[in-house]
Length: 115
Image (cartoon, rainbow, N blue to C red; front, top):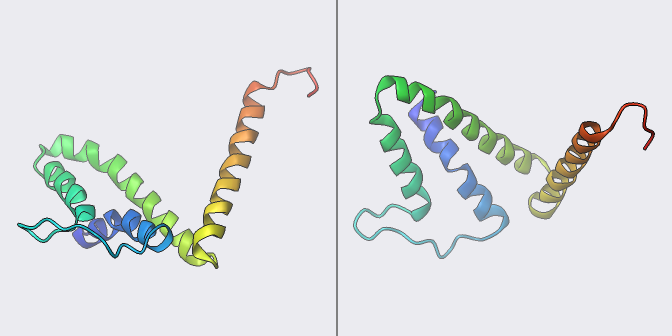
């Protein structure tokens, strides 16, 4: 894992937001540093994580990397599906709904009772 990959992954939600929900033409930037508000929070989190002791850093990196991989995967799915915005969100919603219904029905199904 490189710092470039981490930075690119932290920007995935911003890129998805700008491509689907907004044109991001009216972004706000910090006057003192020139850093976008979208970049400021991930930067602060990254700097805080890097200042932690090695044991804490090791524990924090596992969930952080999992979240970033999910961001990257979601962005990849959106870039593959035609009509990026509406269709991809609809497909994601439908798949999630079907999976949750299947999980709920299998979880609450009692053996010997037909539903």
